[in-house]
Amino acid sequence: MHVSGVNRHIRVLDEDAINKIAAGEVVERPASVVKELVENAIDAGASSVRVDIRTDTTGISRILVVDDGTGMEPDDARLAFLRHATSKITSGDDLQSIHTMGFRGEALASIAAVSRVTLVTKPNTTGALAGIQLVVDGGEIITDRETGAPGGTSITVEDLFATTPARKKFLKRKNTELAHIYAVMEQCALAHPDIAFRFMQDGTEKIRTPGQGGLLNAVIALYGGEISRALVPVFGKMPYMRIEGFVAKPSVSRPNTHQIAISVNERQISSPPLVRAVRAGFGTLLPKNRYPIVFLAITIDTALVDVNVHPAKKEIRLSREDDVVREVTAAVRMALAHEELIPEGHGPGKTSRPDPSVYRGESAHKGVASPTTAYRADQTKPGTAVSPHRAFTTTDSRLRLTEGRAVHEGGPNLMPEMEIFGQVDGTYILAARKNGDHEDLVLIDQHAAHERVLYEQVLAKRGRDLTSQELLVPVVLTLRPKEAAAVRGARHMLMTEGFLIDDFGGDTFAVRTVPVVLGTQMPEGLIEDLVADLVAEHLKSADGRKERITTVIACRGAIKAGTVLSPEQMQRLLDQLARTENPWTCPHGRPTMVTFSRSVLDGMFHRT
Ligand code: ADP
Ligand code: MG
Image (cartoon, rainbow, N blue to C red; front, top):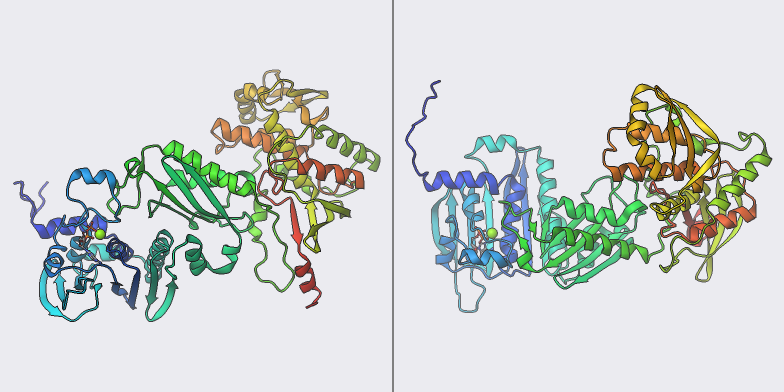
């Protein structure tokens, strides 16, 4: 094969080529330029940073970053554009304890290699009379002159990627690039609440933070009241680390992880393990497909953090990652454990209704064995039961099975005391609770509430003796080959969970026992759901399967919607719920109860 232009002799590349190659790593897109320039301003001790973006039809035409930091002496300014020119470290050993955002000395060289940069800087000291202006085009200084300037630095970047058309082609639509820049600004503002940030786009102010310190101030400036009011403080302290910040109560959540902002030593990072750690702290307070809103600032001994693993410094390596993950989960869980987490209902006319996708948690479950496996329980109406009398006895025995002792002893009991008035449509319990001088209306979903009770009891009993109960009549199963194979493979695990299954060979099985909390009769749909889950591919891990089994037991074993309850039964159910660790949501993350405050009710009746 002949490739024209290939010279087989090895050469060391010239400075320009090296810079352009490095620029490919550091300056991926306009947002990377903003990030590097703002980080330089932060490192220069700025107390205010202004970012001004101009766009035209083709995209981002100009990026201007102005700071009131230290500024630079003329000689330093000329050096700043050289590769590996940095004032932040002097030797390799310094990499062990980085306290600045930058340290690689690459950003300015890289940016200048792929754009035209105008730098105006003046030392922020009383002695300095004039500043210097440098224009660097394609890496060459083309203008170098004295100029009047305020103390600090301003850097203008134009013609970005003009000389690297391949890179320019990969840029996304203008709005996508702007969104990336916005995200960079948000992250910087959150990681540095003590700096006043201002972000302008085509003359419009998009972000302005006060810079008076305090993460909460930055959050309020960026996201306003709704999120800020839902925040709960998080705090954790270990000898080598400190966790501070806020999580939003689960009534305000997101469908993705975009609102999870975690900084480590003032550097916003993207760390899947830490995101998982935070999510784990929410446990079943959120549906599977929802993510919390989180602002955490973690301070760790710099010796335990390696920041030199990503060219744009977005990722870090933590020496004691497992410990950090565990502490973060614990801190988040602890913060939520001390809060009353009943979501507020809204009256009509309010546009911000509780996020409807929260309620999709359950239907997200995909039954495989039969189309009827998807939570039919919820739809059962009164009258479906063979006779009202039977329905009552079943409910009574179900409540007796979950009477048990308190699963959750010692922890705070935050569920408010409530006065029960009745039941709506055999589904919702109607109650009132005291709230200061007033009373609030509370609606409780009886199925979700009992599901929560069962779920925690199964978890508490797991691994102890006497987990199973003989069924009055064994349930005979005839399965499809794929299902039969799945059940055979999981028989041992099912036994440890309380399901003793006889294998008659072929496609026939008999279930002889169930977990004690289910009593002596197999709840409708339970075994179908279990089999469907065993077949499902996505539940590969043993923990995932056990979790699903517990959820299925809770869902199928719980009192159904559409079951008429006596006042005494409703009271017993609420008493049991009050003894759980998390009375606020069912295992799928749906709320067990919703309140309507006196003021919301007043609004609904136009009473002002
Ligand atoms: P690094 O930040 O890794 O040191 P850069 O290429 O980003 O590398 O910057 C090179 C040097 O230029 C910095 O070490 C710093 O001394 C100087 N510098 C860059 N931006 C500023 C600024 N806004 N204010 C003061 N000094 C700056
Ligand atoms: Mg830098």
